[in-house]
Image 1 (spheres, rainbow, N blue to C red):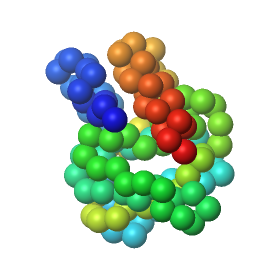
Image 2: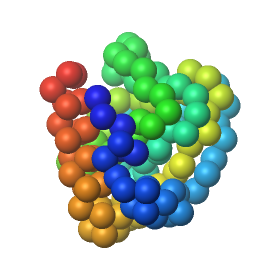
Image 3: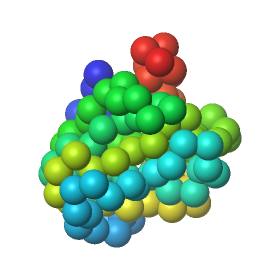
Image 4: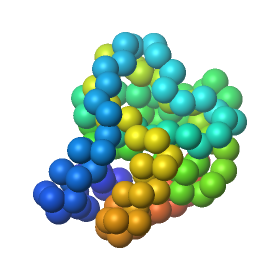
Length: 123
């Protein structure tokens, strides 16, 4: 799976980073809960998360991966719970900021759509 950073120019990536809020998250903390509204997404800078569906781990993601984008892109409820498997450093984005960035940076929109499609195909 391609990381978002691999599809953007350095200037586009700088714009994305500038719009995010840098957070640290302790291990065991839930970032996203299954069956909740799409109100945020996170770009993982450091650490690893587990992806759980109905309390069963179905995957892990790490630095360069984004979580929370599927529900925003598809305008649906969350399909999984995301839990910090280790201490994390992430960039937090509201749904509004993701939508603004996608309008401003077509490569980001395309990458998020492709990532969401890939993940749905794997699910």
